[in-house]
Structures are given as structure tokens and as C-alpha cells.
Image (tube, chains in turn brown, orange):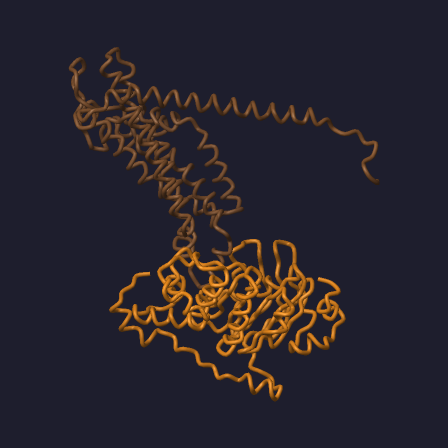
Length: 288
Length: 286
């Protein structure tokens, strides 16, 4: 073969047309997505902000039809349910991730666990709720915050395990070998050097997993239910934001509907705050 | 590790290793050509990555307080060979070594030999500087604390000593609390050397320690190797034949997993016995 003389050239005009088309499709798709997000955010802020006042955060709900009051019990309830879920789900997921990245790796057991994790991530959260219902609610004979926390922990577990694995896999093998080469036992090398090198990513992954489950509604409906009254006892039904939104939004009372908007805004602000925190940590982490 | 300072002080006398002051015998050997004490004897070392064999029947003696350079083209098994010495390959389940690597009478590869003890006695420097994600001070203290109970002041002294012997002290003495990763590449590599020698190993393995750093930093490390051999037995894998010629006493030429030739560096570089060695050294292949 010598030269390209006589070989037909591809049309430049067609190439430019294709380029322009793809660019427009991408731009329109992005715009639609961002517009939808912006709309939701705008509506939540506009409606929700109207319900935000000191009472909203510090008072208990008033009896239906009585104006005023707040959702203090639901705010505290969500914090408690999420905290217990994090206390169960984060360590389990973290060590499962360590197993996948450091010990199991390409082995058969690890492959199976990895597959199960991937499937579990995709399971609708209401099924997890049914699982916790069958496991705990039926055994206890009544709804409880604990059952909800377990459901949320089960949702977190595969997410945390996979992110932990992915993040640990980013740590170069040189660091692993260096830690072992100075005579560190495996567990010290993993916890003291490898996880330390990856800590920004690990913390980020953990926060995002907690944030993800803090907005779950379906599994809580089947486990925690809700509670109009003040309760911080994890063995009893507990008030929480998402089920409160679900219930208030279904009432004909404008006052309660407004509170549902307020609770929605609170969750959005929480998610936003957590994401900002994550960015901050990621930036800090880069200095090391 | 729990840092019980009072307890550590009490036990210090008993458990802290004596600073190893090996007699400098270099003048004896170089002037009279006598046989040196053998530190490590490798016998019939085979190595496998899964089913693929990478080393074939490697048999070689490494002399105490000498620098032995391992040279050869890429993929010839240089790194694989020294990675067997501290059993770092055991991190990967598909890698396997057979044969014997005898250090001071006991076989490193035998399962009765504690792997952490092997790694305390045989330090390693890797190709890419890999400081731990902690401060300069902690980078050195980490290995020390793994193996010994030390009082805080003793720890500080030993960290300083290791940094001095790695020719890094003057550059980092005001940055001990800064992250090790904030140092320059050459400094990071000397930090890794300090880390490796802090707990007084007997052998230091170096796997192309200068391939990722600039020429000036390379110079410093070569000077350092010269200095370190007074105390340690050094096995240096290098791509750079000039480096092998400059710093080593002995050179082994590897090709396709076999040790083709092994002898005094001056002889290997001036008058090798094997045609393959000569071809490699003169740049005809590799």
C-alpha cells in the first residue's frame, strides 16, 4: 500500500453535522434534567420555607385541626433511626468492603459476595422493608424504630461495601507492599496505612450512604410506622420525616400539607449539607 | 500499638536492638580478594505466577556488607527474584516460590520462619516512592513501633538517626510534622530508605529505587547506597547499567528467569564470560 490517492474521502460536512447533532442532543437532555431538578427544588423552597419557623423545629404536632405546632418528634426520630442504621450498616459494609478489596479479591467467594451486593443495590427498598417486617416486626409483635433501622442498614450494607471496595482498589499496590515490607501485620497495614490513605474517600462514601437511606420512605412505612407523640424508644414506633411527609401530604388540611413541604425542604437541605461536607472532606483529603 | 511510656521505659534495655556495628571488612576483600561472609544463599529458587514459571533454578550467594546489582532486560525476573526474599509476593495468592533462600542458616521461604520477622530483618525499597499517609516523623516511627517498645525520647532519637543516615535530616528537620507525601520525589525515596533502615534490618532490597526520580536525586541515593553498605547487605535491582557499574561490588546478569552470569562488577563489565552478558552490556539487546 502506498499513499491514499484515489481513495474516496469522507464528507467533512457530514462529520460536522453529526458533531452538531450529538452536541444538541446532549445539551437538551442535560437541560431537561436540570430543569426538572430546579423545579422540584424551587417548589420545595417556595412552599416549604413558608412553614419554617421556630415552632416547626421545636414544637410537637398539634391535634388535627388545631393550628400551629411543629414536627420536632419526626426530626429527632429520623436522626435516631438513621443513626442506629448507620451504626449497624457502616461497620458491616466497611469490613465487607475490606474483605472484597483486600482478602477475597479475585477469589470465588468474593465474586459471589460482589454479585450479591450488586443485586442488593438494585433491590427496591420496599422489599427490604418487607424483609425487616418479617424478621423483626412479626417477631416483636409490633412496629419499632429498630426494625426500620435494620431495614435501612440492610440497604446501606451493599452500597458501603462496594464503595469501600472501589475506593480501596484505588490505593496503589506499592503502598500495600510498603506497609507489609516494614513488617506490619496484614490488619495493621490495612487499617493503619491503606484505609488511612483512602480515608477521604471512605468518609465520603459513608456519608453518601447515610444520606441515601435518610430519605427512604417505603421501608419505614412497613417497620417504624409513625408516631404522633414523643418517643425516643427504639423498640417502639417512632415519628420520622419521610413517613410524616407521606401522611401529611395525604390529608385535606392545608396546614399539614404545608408542614409536609417543610419536612421535604428539611430533607433536601440535609442532603445538600451532607454533600457540601463531602466536598470539603474530599478537598482536605487531597492535601495528604 | 498502645504507647505505655512508663512500661516502655522499663523494658527498653531488654528489647531494643543493639545498633548493629558490623566490622567494615571492605578493605580486606578488595585488597586481597578474599571470600566474604555470605549473608544470603539462594538455592534452586523457582518462581511461578500461576502456571507460568518466571524464575528457573536461581542459585546465588549474596555477600555480607556488599552491594550486589541485578541487571537484565525488562521481564527477566530481576524484581521477582528479590521479591521472594521478604516474601512480599505472598500478598498475591497466585504467586508461588520454591527452593531455598537461606539467611544465616535458616530458610526464609520455610513456613516455620515468621514472615514479620523476615521483613524486620530484610527491608525493601520500591521503585515508586511510597510514603505512608502520615507525617514525616510517623513514617519512620511506624516501622520502629511495630517491632519495638520505645520510649518517646528514644523513638525521637532513632527517627532522627535514621533520617541522618539517609542524608535527609537537614532537609526535613523542620518539616517532621508535615505529610510525607508533601516532600519531593527524591526526598520521598530517601524517606522510604530511612523508614527501611530505622528498625535496623540486616539486608536492604532495592527494586529500581532511582527509576522514578531525577538525576540529582539519583546521585544522592547512589552516595547513600555506598554509605549504607557499611552496615547492610544490599541487593539492588537496576535498569541502569551505569548505576550498577558505579555502586555495586558484584553483579548478577539475569535473562529469562535464569542467572546467566554472576561475579565481581569490574569483571562482568570489562570481561564477562558469557556472550549473552557481553551483548547486553554493550547494548546489543535489552
